[in-house]
Amino acid sequence: MSSKWNDNDYHPYADEYYPLSKHYGGPGAAGLMKKTGIKGLIVHITDGNSLLSSLRTTWENRAASAHFAVDKGGTIAQYIPLSQRSWAVDGWKVDNLWYSVENVAVHGETLTDMQIRMNGYLLAWLNGEYGVPLKLAATPDDSGLSYHAMFTKSKPCPGKPVIAQLQDIVDAAVGLSGG
Image (cartoon, rainbow, N blue to C red):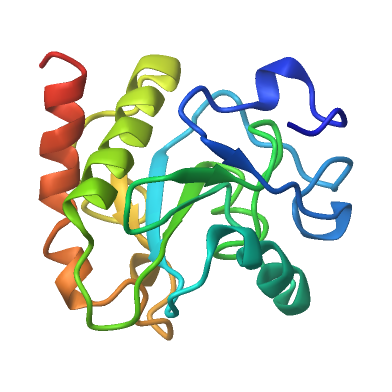
């Protein structure tokens, strides 16, 4: 764990921590998450089969970030303190209301069962922490579980196979929260 983060900036389900520099959503970055009005979780794919540890360098080279990433085995890594917004969609209006999770996959692949389960854990946590509904978001202004391309049509992320699995993530979250 990074000593630069406050205790409440660590996610309880994260297995690994790879703090980013302050320029891309890391400690001290401009832009706090709005703690009221959190809308939900945006699903992304890395579009590569990267190791969780290597994503830090990739994102810093691209001026991008996400709060979490999940590898194919279900390991969750955290890159940004929970109090900071990411640079996953727009770095501003969307990212300060939504948490983002990257999933290790290439375009056209589906998520593994463990990735679905761990994304479900993240959504269930958002439900318990912020009251995010355990449902699919129908529009960018809605709340629940969403995906990158809903906010920016120029990005195919996470791809149709993953979008087709979003209800599975919601169902996992419902099951994990006892609903």
